[in-house]
Image 1 (cartoon, rainbow, N blue to C red):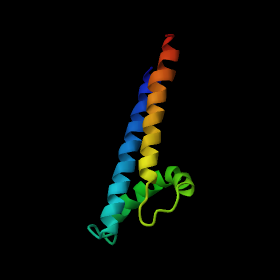
Image 2: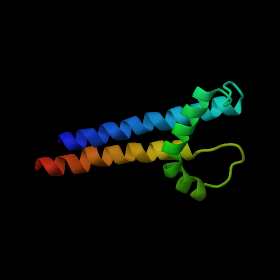
Image 3: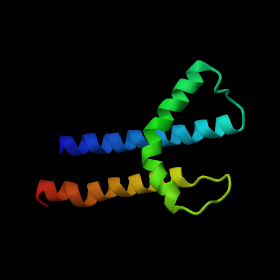
Length: 97
């Protein structure tokens, strides 16, 4: 069970990273923050590198909606589904229920 708790925590942390990445991309797109600032660039690059491998396949499947990117929403819903699968099917099976 501690291993499953760590997996659930990592999934929850990744959800927050996806949310932070989406918000930062909006702030950059609306020119609220400037990527010429080294700290902003470093944070944006780190978030991009952490989330892009998971969102790239989703973007390939989703239709082009112009400037609207729904891949973070789809990824978050998929991660929540994964958490539910772990909580309802994997954890009880390991406990012997």
